[in-house]
Image (cartoon, rainbow, N blue to C red; front, side, top):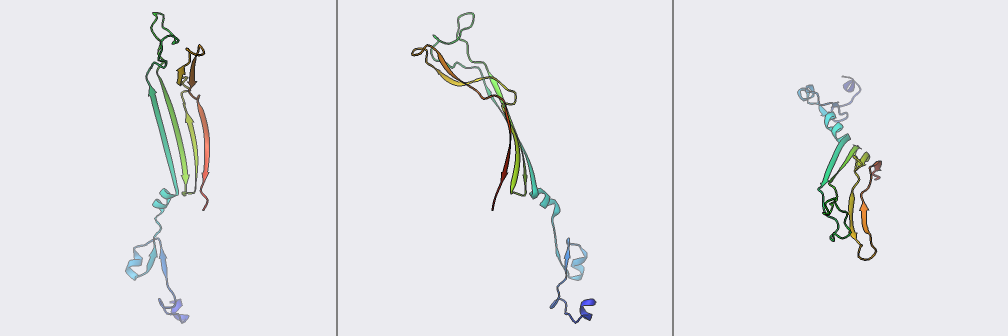
Length: 144
């Protein structure tokens, strides 16, 4: 062995370490390092897909029927039913940064999100319209 010819005592002066946890190392008493590549890859990056869908059945928004819109037969006309679809996809790498794409109200549903009757005071009904389709992107980085 070259180490012995050089006057080195193995393992007192020189340590030999194998790599990749080969089976032969156990036979000759060699210390080895194992690198779990598959697990490292899993920890290195994640892909997250998330979505949700919310449904609101038709409902009566205004308590008094005086200012509520009416059906042809004179009955109060309820707010129509609607559904809202949201989705997000996130790519996270090495637990330090992530990139996300998201969309809200992807079906671009028009709906009334709330409100109240001011007909007795001002003669009209106040309502809040739900947000239209929105898409966006986010980038997040964690500093140490």
